Image (tube, rainbow, N blue to C red):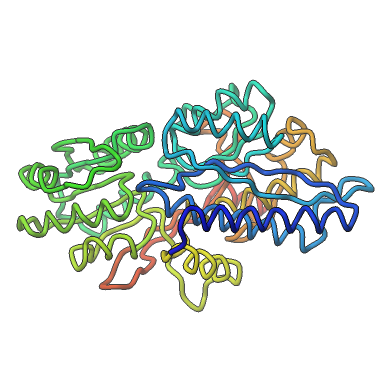
Length: 398
C-alpha cells in the first residue's frame, strides 16, 4: 500500500505534468480542490477518492478539456488531509481557497469537515461537492452545495426494508456508530427506519474514531441479545474487529454496516466473522461491470489494496458533472455553474444521471443514483439488491 507521502508526491507530479502540458498547448487551468481523510481510520476512503479524482481529471483533459467559447480549460485535482475533523476541515478549506485559488470543490469526505468547509464556501461563493450526510447541509439556504453520492436519506430507507424482508424473523436491533457528525446523522435515520419496519431498537451507542480495543463494546452489544447489530457508519476495519469479538462471545445474528464500503477491510480484521454482512456503500464487480467501473476499480485496488466503493466513485461523477455544467452555462463562474447543475444530464459512472431531491431537501442538490446493497459471501462480495432512482427514471423518460 502506498504511504501518504507517496500519494502526495504522486499527486504533485501529476499536477506538474498537467501544468506543463496545458502551458504547451495554450490552455488555461481550473484547480479542483478535494478535502479528504488521508490519515487515520478513514485513510483508504481518502486515498482512493484522490486517485479517482485524478483519473476523472485525466479523462476530461484527454478528451479536449472544458470548452467555454473559444477557450479550452484543463482541470487539476489538489488534495489535502482533513483528518476527519472540523478543525482540519476548516484549515484545508482556507488553504485551498487562499493558497490554491480554488473556486470548485470536487468533493470532500466526512460530515464534520464538510460542515466546516461549507461555512466558508457558501460565503465565498465557492461551489462544493460533498459525500457528507444529513439534511442540514442541503436546501435553499445552501445553493452552492451538492451531494455526489447517496446519503442515508436515499439508501437506508431502501436497505433496511430489504434486510427485514430477507430476514423476516428479526424483531430487535442494536445500533453502534462513530461518535461524530457522520455517525449522528446516520443514527437518526437508521433508528427511524428500523422502527418503521417493526424492528425494535434495543440500544444505540457510540465509539470514538481511532478506537483499537473493541472487546468491551462488543460485550455490551452482545448483552442486548439483539437479532441485528447495525454498525452504521463504522469504517470496515473497525466493523470487522467488532464482528470478530461478537462471534467470540457467541452472538449469532444479522450483521449490517449501512455505510460499509467493501469486503477487504472487513475480512482483513474480522476473518470469517465478516461472512453474510450486509453493506450499503460497496460495489460488487464482475464481468458485467461497465468499463469505467472496472478501470476505476483497478486503479483504486492498485493504490490502496481495497476495491473501489461508492464514496470514492462520487469523485469521478462530480468532475464529469462540473464539465457538463460549465459547458452548458458557458461559464466558469461558480454561481452560474451552480445554477446550471440541476438542469444537466451527464454520463456518470452508472450511466446518465442528473440532480434532484427537491422533495427531501427543498432544492435539487442530490445526485440521482441507484441504491446498491451488497453482502459478503465467504471472501466474495455479491450484489443482493438494487433500486434504480425513480426520480431519474421519470426525468429520462421525458
